[in-house]
Length: 455
Length: 104
Image (tube, rainbow over all chains, first blue to last red):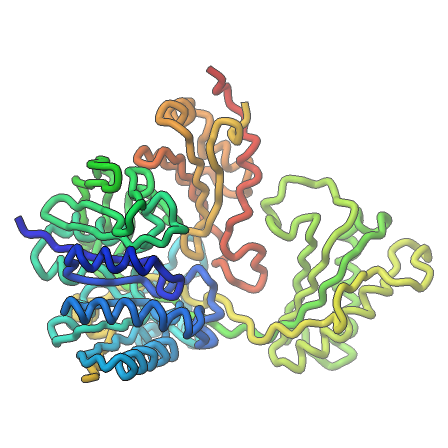
């Protein structure tokens, strides 16, 4: 019976058990792979081009993974590199791989797969009515797409398969769906897609499928037609039905259906069996092909430059009247902006009141005020100068604002923990694009250009 | 009996930037079935705890890991300027005190 074995670690740069990895290599995997990114960290990394993890931690993991793969003569793949999987992230990761190759005298074919989607492509697709929102967010307009600082599409399995066909030994890819990073060899071997995709989904978080993630065990999926077995590779680590089944549940809207570019991983009929202390067999998983392939787009929009003011308020005459205080404060800042000839379109002001409703906002059911509150005033200006100009006024304007009819006596409302009280947070981004784009079969590969390097 | 006293854990997280998902875990198949079969956790109940429409609430009884999952949409994608909790991990408090006749 044909079997493809995939060895997976958790997020690149988070580390993993060295002994567990060596034990995993002895299990003779056909592929070594790991996921290097996530949109969970917010749009800042995509927008700014900054890597989400340090080069030191990435390099440690990459050196072990690539070294192990080369020793066995099997492919190594990673996707969503740099956290956000954009162009600067891909470039930086390719550079780390070059360094590793040089330092260890390793020679192999490297494929770099781009996930950058041109704005014109997205805009043309919007005109054709083929771009839709994920969830309840606003539909995407051509204008909004044009404002994106960086746009990527989550590639599926096709570019990885193409890179292997081109002879790649090591594949470094930009933004990908999590399981797509793990499926190529098994799909190419003709194994049933239900087992292949669900197995990939169960191992794409590495040690999170074990009972003690802190032990850092890599996991091995043994994929066959119609079933797969998940096993930890480190001694004294365990996978259980609950820990394996939990991965499909984890941070997904629907635990039974996980959408991919070309279909849906359907685990609603899956049967999980604990076959020994460590391992779980899963059967009955399905992959339901979609009529039209779709690529999920992510785009980060620069919305301005952020400055914060952080202050505590302890006055029992003010704390229960925060809504009123903030309304008057906001109007006073608007006057100050006006006197500085700053248009109200050039800045946004938010208040977060810790001790009242900062964490849950409109969802907060508790209405009783605390005895003190932490106030974060957040101004985002179109330019750093605008943000700074408004922020400079925040302290004096708010601290001297007397809503007690003279009781403040010229004192101050704001207890500043820090000097300076104003904090420059730099560029601020939002998810300007979080939408699905219909694509053709050919575009599943053509939208993700591959560059080959001989190292 | 309060949900937090029969569940083994209650947590929230973003499921992508446009959904918020809650996972309620149970210590045994028996407690999982007792609560998921009791008809207490409904779309209408969740819509009284969070300002959303009942039809926007998804509820799943996930037997393989003994978890009741509830997913609701976020009207604004996470990570935006007005973000309060960009991982969505501190949004579960209203679920803790859900009452049900779950005593044995």
